[in-house]
Image 1 (cartoon, rainbow, N blue to C red):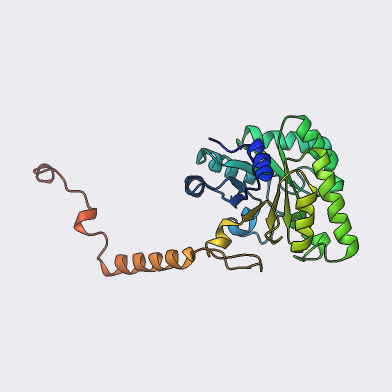
Image 2: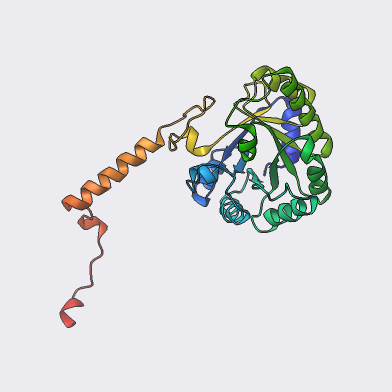
Length: 274
């Protein structure tokens, strides 16, 4: 059966951990889905790992629609959540609802995700009122990296921890079905998770969350530009790929590929009649 927003709530109530991972293309989405992962996040992290932009700020709605639709075509079971990119919801409630609608219609998303807490609660409320499920995202919010002054752990002071708790309750009250907690102290994330009735999905927020999310290329060892402390490499696929590419290069250059078994033969007599 397909995973839905109701499944998320049921899993939290039963104490079952939720697995989420990013994907940005059809082939990867199929593999993630077949592995039994509960949710696929089409993250604006594609700006870093797919487009080489260095940040998420430059990612566009067209980027998210293009990659989101590819993932949706490769997914049968997992809940597909698509990020709302920078400035697709910040300017107005109208923009937020209209762009969330585009992601549902054109990217075939099951839900959208946006960054922020108290300050975007009115956007979340309006999107949910339009019958579009919303996953919130608080703590370290990459779209606001310029305002935050870099990729820094959030909630390390009493004031910032208090603000994060306020944000968590605000997004729940606004109707979010889940909230991503990024780069915050594990103890604070555990408290947020205990206080909320909606699931928390951690990334760099400890084991006390109701679920976890990682960037696909990070956990597979395919992306080395920057590796956050919270990343665990579950495989070194990047090394396997590099080795395969090098072997292909060698075989092409020494003439051992293609071999006869990789070639087609013309029917007898065809070439003689040319």
